[in-house]
Length: 242
View 1 (spheres, rainbow, N blue to C red):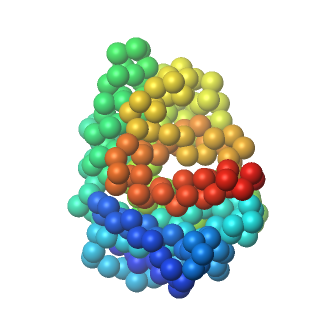
View 2: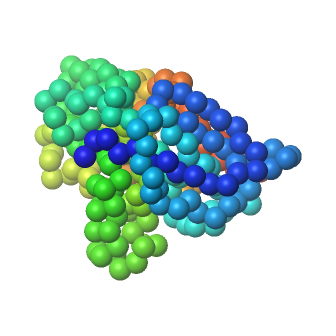
């Protein structure tokens, strides 16, 4: 149900705020500018009608996450920033991502590729249901985290993430076999030109299972700000040689 606006709070030492359309991302730093670990963020409990949200960045600086697999915390985007994709009333994205996906979809169609939107924006309630389902299937929360994000930690909350399928091969939807489809091969070559990148490639640093169907939009400053926490951590690990 669209319209949940959680506030995710963590105690911080020094914060650098990147406020963009509908979301704010904060990076935890000590007085020397080094990222430090803090306890994992609590589940959001206080709804708010404000579209601007605050989420804290929590990776430790040693090169290994204290909670692994690790999912970064994300705020739920405000309803006013969402648009439904044409032909799929159930799939909604941030308006910037929605426009970019339609262009991506049209360009793919010109080459005979049928890109199908499978999932976009998700509320906390939907993500909680999906995560609990994985716990039951996999037997533990740790195992579930490899395949699904806990509520409050899904890229889908932002409206900038989308699961994509190949309309000609529906049996591969949300399956590893999607990586063998013409749609994935086309995305691998052209998605970056439209501002999309694969969130969880094989052997990704977060320890999340490979998801060839899951793409995030980073084609505007607002979208880049939302995922700045991921890029910040990656850059730090590269600098440290991890």
